[in-house]
Structure formats: C-alpha cells, structure tokens
Image 1 (tube, one colour):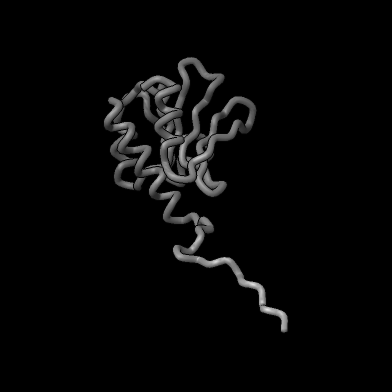
Image 2 (cartoon, rainbow, N blue to C red):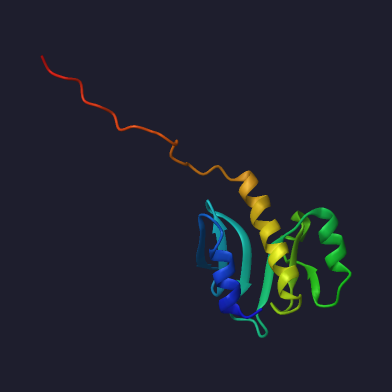
Length: 123
C-alpha cells in the first residue's frame, strides 16, 4: 500500500482525523486517541497500529514486524515498511485498530430527533 492510499483509507473512518506529531510522525486519530502512526521521515516509511493480543503475537512471528517502540506493551506493532503486508490484510488490521480505539472513545453525538430549545412565550 502506498502512503496516499493508506492516508485515504484511514481518513475514510467516521470522525477520523490526521495530525503531524513528534516531528514527522503522521498520526491518525479518533476523538484525540491514535489508531495508526506513519513515520514520514523513515525510509522506507514505517507504520504502527494497535492490534488484539492474539494478532499481536502472530504478527511478531513475521519478518519486518516488531513491537512498536514505547507502545509494544500495549499490543502495538511496527511494520518496518507500509507495504510489508498485502493490502486486504493491512486494511483489516487498520479497521481492527480503529474499532478498538473507537470502543474506548466517547464522542459527543447529537441525539436523533433533538429539537431546538423553544423560547417561552411572553404574556
């Protein structure tokens, strides 16, 4: 997967935002919480994301994938290159990362059918 395709995919999730942090780390967030990080200054560009504990262990057995620095204890992996995995598999893993962050994020959503406050009539 190329960087621009990865960027479009991550931003296609509801309420997803991107932010440049820590120098040249492109962070994809939901409600202020990160679900994926791309190292723009690394060659090749690396990618970090959160995964389920059983998936974390499976991914670490593959070449070019290791625990993410500072985040590995929270089941984040680092792909040494964003094209390390086939696109369908990478998309599924990013969806899973987004879903795990989404489950812990409380976004304020308007109630359906909410009405504007009406002013009291003056007599």
